[in-house]
Length: 569
Image (cartoon, rainbow, N blue to C red):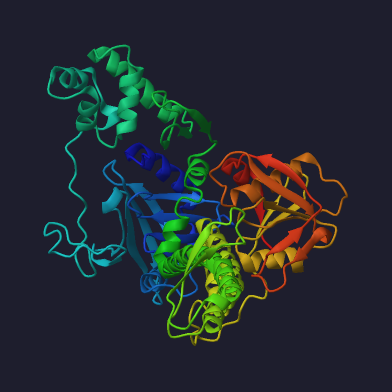
């Protein structure tokens, strides 16, 4: 990933075109690293995402749907107080670096314009989102840096905002052959490190691309390759994702990276595709780490319970041995007396009539010794039935929690709220008194539309699956699910007796992508009409059985999921 100075410059150019003079209407905080603004500009609502995540830091316009927490954090409330209703007067890149500055203007009750500045510093683990007054006093920032952490640059409320120290480097547009002669003449560094040390706002990826495109490491060759790359970025940008050993993106295809290349019409469309689903798990962990931990604990607990019950079941195999010993004692009772401690006799239940040693209690009569073994037999026999019931329950629990782990892997915040409610209803989480809020009457299912205009509905947890299959769907509509593994129920809202291949493949891809087989190849997907499904009595929501079905094998493809048009319910 390379959100360097050149990508920042391209981002600012698109942001200026799309957001300048726009009014900030809504502000949400998606996680401790991310803010989402809705900006009204030219009669359109546009979503802009600010991220200071250590790995995914960036700013971009987005067409993806993001779910926010129901109760906004204090920082979000503060941003709403200062920024909702304000106008974005200007957007600029600071010092050709990875710093973006938004000039925000608000008119007060006296008719005077109040100016504030919003800074986004895209610097990996040092990234930050900072709001200041016109005089440079920090109102607040997402990451506080007190004087004890950095005495040269304090980032916390009431401190004076100071820009990161400027690097003494050359702007790429001002590059000359002399710079490359200096780079090559320095024998202690490679051309890649020399380019990074000399020029401002470049990432390792673009430096490697320059060296790769040059025919040799001669100054003239490096300079020509550098000019070629910079001209392509300036005049013919082609935002692309390189799918090699490590997925990477840039403003143009990087020839030195081997693998498939996917190009996009705009920078932000490419960023949407690149980051699709990547941050979801971090958001869930930020807000609901206790839920994932609880599910893992119950899963591990039941796995251990299953192992213990299997060992106990193996021990109950001695039950038949107890019965045989009791029978043999009764058969030999005529030659036994109270006080005998051992019976050695032929085992007439054995084909070879092998001798068997049977321990006796000298304080009991032969009849009582036999009854003692029969009691052990009956106890072990009863234990088998009890253990088998517990084994079945433990297996059901394991299936249930493995399913929840699968759902959590692709869940958004609203999905996890529903999983949390489900865990409370089933008694795994303690119910607590909460503020009375108007609950949604329907689960938060995902809906997609095919090119033919057929709706595909995806359930992403047990409650949603139950709703999709047993409440929303009609008898003659079609149902898809990954075979023999936890995953989403996918409903194809078509009552035709036969589906067309594009709908079958689209629904099967959704079922595979939102299942445990997401990262596998050739995932088996069963599909049938809803009338062929039977609900399993007493099972968790969404569990069904079916006998009439067809199976298709498909490789889950994220690009195909993104290509489907997502619609509101």
